Structure formats: C-alpha cells, structure tokens
Image (cartoon, rainbow, N blue to C red):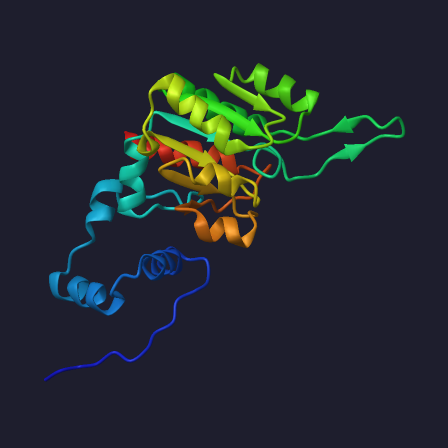
Length: 224
C-alpha cells in the first residue's frame, strides 16, 4: 500500500528549516530526498562528512559549499557591516568611532595560523579600519577601494589564485562586484537581500556580532 505524506511543519530557525531552505535554493527534489532517507534509514552524506554534532551556533553549509571551503587558499572580507554592525559614531569634533569584536579578531588569527591568506577590501578610507586591520596582521589590506573587482583581480594575479581558491564575505551591493571574482560567496545575516540571495553561505550571526568568527570556524571545521 502506498502512503502519501501531504504536508508537515518544522520550526523556523531549526536545523531542518535551514536545510530545507538550502535544498530549495539549490533546486533539489525535496520529495525524492525525503523518500531516500525514509527508505535507507541513513543520514545524508553531508552529515557523515561534517559530523552529527554540528554546533548549533554555526550555519551548517551544504556539502557543495563545504567542498568549496575545503579548497580555499584565501579569504577576503568587507569591513563595515561585516566586521562591524555598520554603525559609525561621530563625536562633537567630527571624530569617527567604530566597534570591532575581539572574538572576530581571534577567528582571523585562526585562519592565518592554518596557512590561509587573509585580507580585507573596504570602500571606506577609514584610519580606524586601517589601524584595526594592521593589528590583525592582514596580509592583504585595501581600504578606500572604489572598485573591489579590480582589487580582487590584482590579488588573484599576484598570488596565482584561481577563483575557486578564494572567498569573499560582504554585506552590501558594492560587494557583488567582489562576488563576481571568487568561487565562494559569503554573507553575514544582516546583509542586504540581493547579497544574501547571491551568497553561497549566510551566517546565523550579524556583522559586528560574531559573523566573521562564525565564518572562520565553519571554514576551518570543513577543512579539518
């Protein structure tokens, strides 16, 4: 006897909800996947490779994206809206202030210590940004970059990198130019809708509130 499951519901924000969203984005045949799981009684290849105990605070990538992460040699980031929440404070003298996370900074150190090339490409020519990124020992530091695609092409040429070996994390429309130059597109949870739609992976956390650290940890987890 054939039994048809017509509908079911899952909680928003759950692991199942995120997985279904990824399947829809990839155009997967969800009914066929569910049938396969029911018939086999086994977990998916992705769960086998990434482990059953995936940390709840990290956005789990699809296996396709995990494979992209395993092949990376370079990760580049935007700054405002990624390392920060996008807020710029001005005092009465017109001096700027930006808030950066020490937690994100340690994530960058983890990437660098693993042998990956790390850098930032930002449109804003901020002395504060430059000072912070110098302290993080960014190998590629580009502030005041009006056309990010030009900067990324130069980085790829100097380091002999293919598109598939480089990732970029951005949050706003200008970052789409950088997305065109890389094989892995990352975005924080607070990114603009067009950027989220173009990204291969979107963090659970927002820029300035752990998005960079989450990206670093997920990349390293997949590579290890």
